[in-house]
Length: 227
Image 1: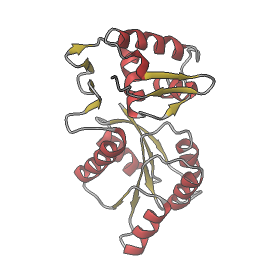
Image 2 (image 1 turned 120 degrees about the horizontal axis):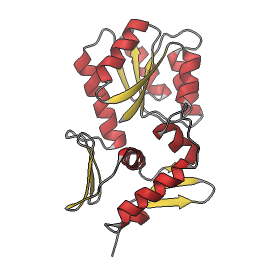
Image 3 (image 1 turned 90 degrees about the vertical axis):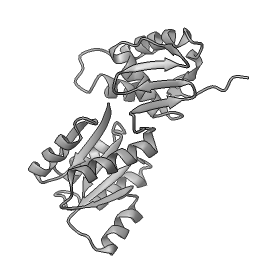
Image 4 (image 1 turned 45 degrees about the horizontal axis):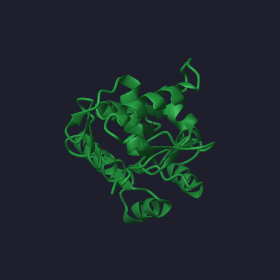
């Protein structure tokens, strides 16, 4: 499941947005710009839904800071302002999309899906695919060509996270925080255990080398072209 961050000071609206998107993603809510910036800087979110008018630090400043720090998590701006110059200002700061309040639930969901489709490979049928490796996010089934790969719980979540970030280096800490969570009582070594288990499952179809270990750096999912 995807991870979304909603930064909105209207408590009721923030909860409504979370409810709209709960079937698509795990949603984290915060109500001020400084907290939103701190959470967004972790790099753990797939999309940030960001209000412009926020206490502490306004949304455009949050967005500008993220981009200055080379954090390119997609951002959908929410605002009551509908003037062209306001939209231009948002896009100039690095926004990926812009939605004016009030908005329809269906439009918000479609726009988030469009961002995920463009940046994370979400397809209408909710599949992820890399070459002949295909993952059904709804049924949690994995196939390579016509062969099913049986993945359990966190193994499946780990593969999805790696595939969503294809080509990107993920640190052990990022993987741990995303899959097991900040409050997990287990240790960081669990990442290595599950990566080893996942590689064994992929070895059954000959693609274990699609997960690369970069020593002292992290891990990377990259489809290998075979001759």
